Length: 70
Image (cartoon, rainbow, N blue to C red; front, side):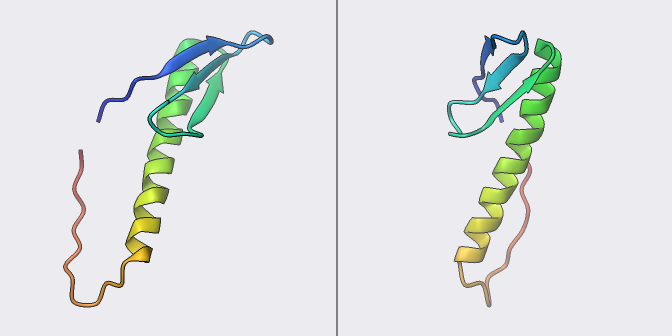
């Protein structure tokens, strides 16, 4: 998947990275590379958590569940 990311420099000099497509998905780093790496980890964790919540919300008894990587 590809996401647009907004980068801003905070007053303390750190770079803040935010993904507008996933509200609340924000991270930071000492430089752009670190901020993007940290945001990537946050995106993965956030998407995984949403997937787990959606899975738990369904009552799965006779349904076949498989993983699909995108």
